Length: 146
Image 1 (tube, helix red, strand yellow):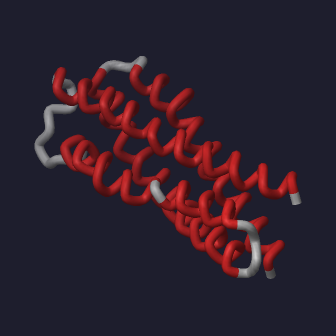
Image 2 (cartoon, one colour; image 1 turned 180 degrees about the horizontal axis):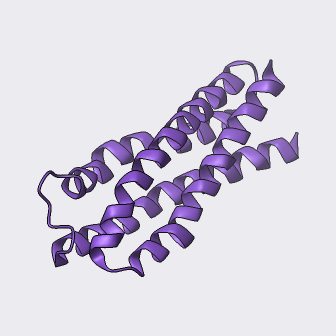
C-alpha cells in the first residue's frame, strides 16, 4: 500500500505539473498573442477544462502523499503533499478573484482591463506551476532515494 500511495502521489503531481507548466509556457502565451477578445473568449473554456482535470489531480496527489507518510514513508512525503496541497488555497484565495472578474457577466472582452486581467492571471497561475514543480521534485527525489 505504501508503494501504491507513493506512485499515485507522484504520478498525479507530475501530471498536474506538466499541465500547469504547459499552460504557463505554451497555452497562455499563445492565447495572449491573439487580440484581447479572442484571448478572453478562449480563456474561459480552457480554464473550466483545466480545472476539471487539475483539481482532482492536486487533491489525489496531496491525499496520497499524506497516506504515504502515514504508512511509514519519510516526512518528505508529507512535505511534498503540503506543497501540492498549497495549490488549492492559492487557487481559491489568490487566483479566484481574478478568475471571477474575467468571468463576470457583461465584461467587455476587448477592453484593456480584460487584457491586464489575463496578464495578471498568467503570472498568478505561475505560482501553481512552481508549487507543483517543487512537489514533483520532492516526490521523485524520494522515490529515487528509496
